[in-house]
Image 1 (cartoon, rainbow, N blue to C red):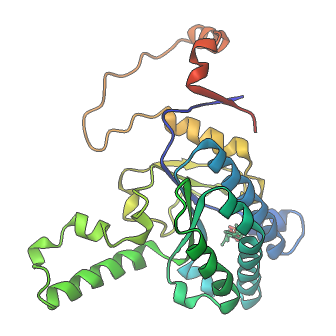
Image 2 (tube, rainbow, N blue to C red):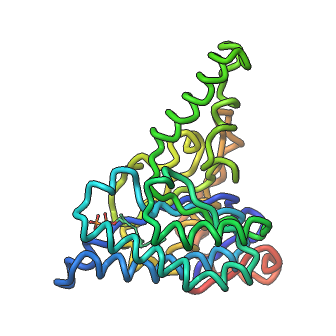
Length: 271
Ligand code: FPP
């Protein structure tokens, strides 16, 4: 059983979905099979996040650097994206989800753009949850784009160099239009950020899961959120008094205590 507090949900969750290739290789299958299975995990996680009431979910589906993978794999990923957008279109529209995309979208092939663009447009007014796909995305590239925009404004005399501050940069980052990520999850056992949401990561809580992305289940998402809720976010300030550390016996008693009083605020979730 995983307990998640209904009142203290991360507003914006980012996920680095890693491990598709290894999932397939472990089974003696082609890497592409891992991506296909990974698409199913995307569906599961989007549904679970929507049910929980997460306001924004950003998925790192294809990095700017991923174009260097073999053509066959890139083509298969583009095809899977198309299939995902087609098959999820009704669910997205029926559930108040706004589908957005960030990154160098001009590089995406027509097979993706012809389904992505209409869905972005048709879901633009939705506000239950924003699902952002990072496609041909790079965090450094996003920072460079924002800096270039500001440099142009300065060159045109529309802004002074002194007005180039962190808010001006922030306002030019499409990934942060839904707010800074509160929680960033990386699956697949690696502990690195791989050029994801770099600017917005400043105060994000990081959660690393050893699950390979195709194995990532609802329960893993709940565990990541529960771990987020157990942390004290200080944003560079001084923390509250440290919480008392429970002895093993106290912890067991706490675990055994009836949860009825808390049931209004605690969601008991089984993955
Ligand atoms: C990283 O795993 C994953 C990717 C580069 C692509 C992620 C794509 C999907 C989850 C499926 C399609 C996306 C959507 C939104 C439907 P990896 O291949 O680097 O794994 P490895 O580290 O095990 O090799």
